[in-house]
Length: 146
Image 1 (cartoon, rainbow, N blue to C red):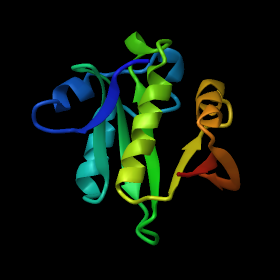
Image 2: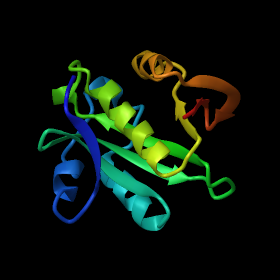
Image 3: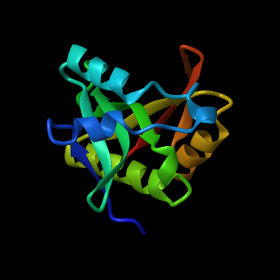
């Protein structure tokens, strides 16, 4: 299993995070990381993290604590760079996100996924996420009790 963890985005790693990209066929599913970092700046409670394997940033996630429930966090963005896909890093990165949520005292993790993004839907289902019955801006809402 890869040695994957999440680390806060800082002055030391933000350029590497901006340079991470999904494949051409996935661009409709996730905003560019520069946009996500701008969102994190605009929403100060949002928490941007690099997904790191060993010493190398391989992905990015943006977590947003629920303003209404301190026990819930939403994964607003989650991506693995196209060069690192197919190596189990998505599952390992998602596990690192869930571990961070637990360490922060969260009991529920939410996220949304495009209905036709089958790869992401399989990943989230394999981690135990289930549909909530909600739709947000055309995306299916999923949740997991951690």
